[in-house]
Length: 203
Length: 203
Image 1 (cartoon, one colour):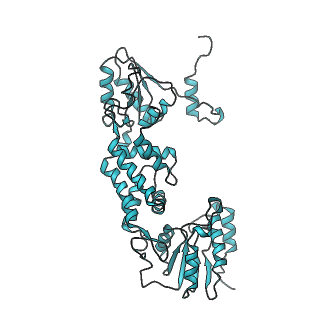
Image 2 (cartoon, rainbow over the protein chains, first blue to last red):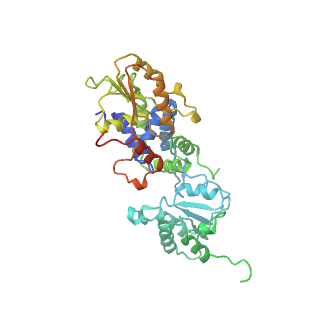
Image 3 (cartoon, helix red, strand yellow):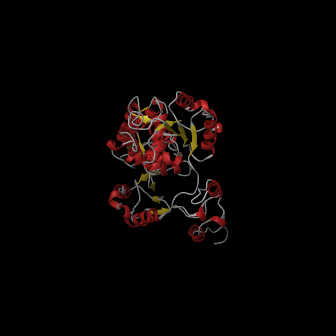
């Protein structure tokens, strides 16, 4: 038994190891860190988890995270009701908000279509999005899923099911990152940048 | 404020971000994971933290982790009292126990000398180790700190302060990992392997 940890330690390592991106070695390292720091610091994490689970919930309209029935953005009367920006996760809402370029509403799918992982349209908040768009009043849906395989598949699927008269469906542009170096861009990104080139002068 | 998370979410991200090896992006990812999974799964981690902090403590003799005054190894009467293996962390005890090659006692320093991080001999359990060795009955101290800068500095320091008559101080050998490839070994490791070569036949 000395070649193993005591039950309380092993339980902690196991619970940590189930977190995304935390492998067995990291789980051990984090567990020992928590055992080493003072009890207030460790319990602060435990309390933050319990409190977040108690207080945080998904917005009943857009499925963003918030602490009320409606999230902060859905309850903001000053925002534009005609445009919906569709994202995969709540963190994408925060990323887009930080650009200060968008003043419309959001819809959080809570994932992307990924058949290998068993995530189809029914596992996402797509039905609710269709209901919002068909209810009227929407002029544009900007699909801001990630520019990867799953995000593209989701965008393609959405562009089909959201084919409602009077509603423009758009997609975030792909291309070189600002400040990036052409030399280091992968060929897919560079190809996309070429394909999506903008006319600067003339038609 | 929409470009930021609500207080409960931010608190959770902050608490996660203080864990070792968890950067701001991972902290966000883990927080959203915890908000997404069901409440039992999330609270299981919270409970494991609280429980481990309540039950787990450091052994009063060797400073290994355990759930009693003496750890499992220190309270095992069948182990050899004459040899002490000195390691940096409790995880190293588990690693050495898994080899089934050592039947003596341990001493966990709870770190290594690292002046850049403000860790000197006084921050480690070195005083307690000296007390154990000078108390008598010990014939060998095997220094098993890591073969890196901090571990080597600690080993050097220990070899000086543990200069007690009748006590052999030894160090884990460095060399090529078993199953490793000579071609891929870094020059330091290969140099150590040469330096520490063992005579197979002849003297």
